[in-house]
Amino acid sequence: MAIEVDGALGRLTVRRPNALNALNAAVLEQLLDGVERLVTNPDVRVLQVSGEGERAFIAGADISEFVGARPADALVIAARIKRVLDALARCPKPVVAVINGFCLGGGFELALACDIRIASTKAQFGLPEIKLGILPGGGGTVRLTKMAGSSVARMLTMTGDPISAARAFELGLVASVHEPEQLPGAARALAEKLAALPPFALGQLKSSLNIAVDADTESACHAEVKAFALCYATQDKEEGARAFLEKRKPVFTGR
Image 1 (cartoon, rainbow, N blue to C red):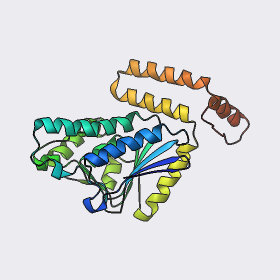
Image 2 (tube, rainbow, N blue to C red):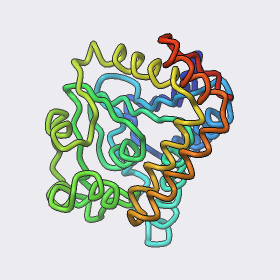
Image 3 (cartoon, one colour):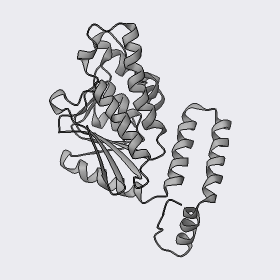
Image 4 (cartoon, rainbow, N blue to C red):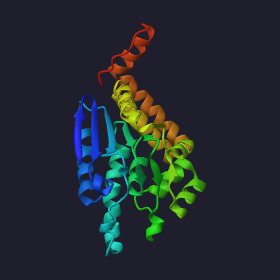
């Protein structure tokens, strides 16, 4: 597991290429620690999650940890991955999943917890847990249903079959698809674009979007108005408005 800070970009890279970057207990603890460290780093404005190598983003959980496990053990496994996914979903900074190769099982669930997903043309997505006699335990059925609809979620989870990056794009599960050699550059360009935006407003925007997924329309609109109003207390709001009127590029400082 690598945790790197490159200017305003914080990178989390799962490094188990010989195991297709499968998630085990140690990797999940390192991911959680990495998210917490990057969230509290004032210099970091954008988080990026990826897997080492070209074969896999994250090919799922480490199945060796399932052998001999009982229901009580399964609850511990599910809680462990839930902590990581909740940390990504609630992170006040934008989180981008850069997906190269297999994005399956827990890896797909982790990607679904990120804000934006961009993928290589060689990426494959799926929730194959049913083929192991279990089902997704990291929120996969929930997030997939909310993003792609019940029919798609049932098809993917009940068959366990993967889909291509092109199909994932058609379903709105990824924001863009790139040739493998172009993916790093696209990820960098996206990170730079997000990092140049006002961080407080981005955090409020993310919170509003998260609420919109679960709350009724009236409650979600009320939350949006509160977030909208809070941005008016920032210097970045003044900078954005003045830059627009002065026909120049704004410089947001995070204040």
